[in-house]
Length: 254
Image (cartoon, rainbow, N blue to C red; front, top):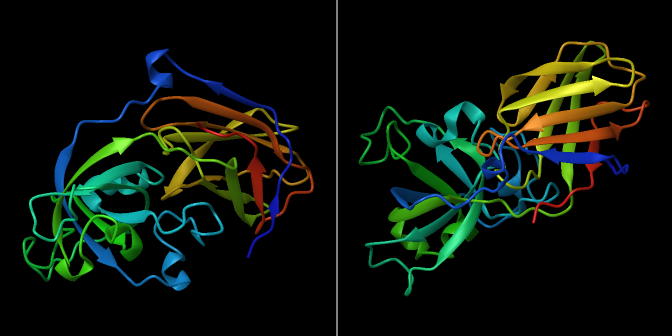
């Protein structure tokens, strides 16, 4: 498990417009939901967004894999959804909702009909939820249920987390525990000896820079895909940073 180093960076939150700074819940839309796995810790590891151990990195079991229609090539990673079961005898009384974070992709299954096993085939909107999350809204024996869903702000605590991978010429950063819109549309890095360097989207919630950044303290600037809000975290990683470690910027999105 990677160490978490927690400096105290200066962090600024900017918005392109006043309206962009406040993310309101979306309307409700119709989809379907299934569940994966069991309730063991092994089911909270990995995923297409690159969040690794979901317990350690702040997501727990309130998570879901999205069909490719919703996953949007990884730009939906970190988005938060309220989901409630509807129009099924397997829904719990009162149609309670649960809130989940998108942490994975539910890939198409072209060998099955979209209405009979190929639940995540385009253009279907589908949530493959963790079993504990599914069991908050419906009887798990149903297997699949119709649901209503809406985007909601992500209420995260504990600060932004930047997990480093790569080498001396290539820095790959996984960004976790993002509040507000929860997602990222663009990211830049600044070394203590450089200006801002645009990072390219790798996959999921990871961004990369092909630059020699060793021996410099690092700052990051990221923009939400949904709200267009820009967050600037200065001096997140010290000059002796290393790959395999996770660095934290102490900001709460509430």
